[in-house]
Amino acid sequence: MVLAAGRGERMRPLTDSTPKPLLTVRGQPLMQWPMQALARGDFSRQLVNTAWLGEKISAQFGAQVDWPGLPQVSLAYSNEGQDFGQALETAGGIVRALPQLAEVFWVVAGDVFAPDFVFTQAAVQRFAASPALAHLWLVPNPTHNQGGDFGLSATGQVLNLPKGAAGCDHTFSTIALYKRAFFADCGLPAGNPQGVALALAPLLRAAMDRGQVTGEVYAGDWTDVGTPERLAQLNA
Image (cartoon, rainbow, N blue to C red; front, side, top):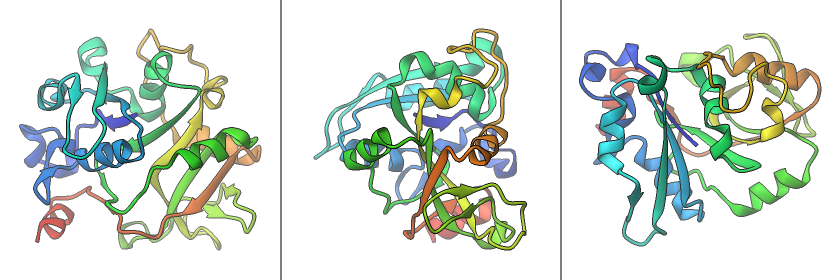
């Protein structure tokens, strides 16, 4: 699942007429980087959730994409804006799409640039065989998030630490594997038929406290393309 529903307020005026995941980074739409990386790992069935200017995203990619040298990608869409008039936040959007997702599935934000990340079948198999319900890839805290998001134990457990606390040395890259069971107790039925907006972070933190979230560090290039300045730096 590629997350592409956000408004991108901090990127205005660029996002007034272009959805943030379609902004160009190094010659192609930002969200195309993780889509192609998934295809490179033979994850050729992808789902994109949309809201703000979502029709432009489906017009860009259609129902299938053929990139040279990669497997053909079949695309499905979860049109939150069309169905409910708004984006459903990360967890609400995932639960909305859950009936179309596999038992174990990737989630990546369409507005994060991580060109070196490799999506592997082996990672899925390891996670599927583990007791964890979510597995996160973390990055060292960037300058714009020096207080961090989470900690990481020596045994690979992601730790629910307050921002700025000792050991809160990692920021969530947005790249993760989930099991459908992670969302079983979120308070929403699969398919989220009422279109309830629900944030992901509280669910993750609660699961961390139960020891159900594992993680590892991704050391490659990573940029949360959250401001026009960061976009310009990537394209410089």
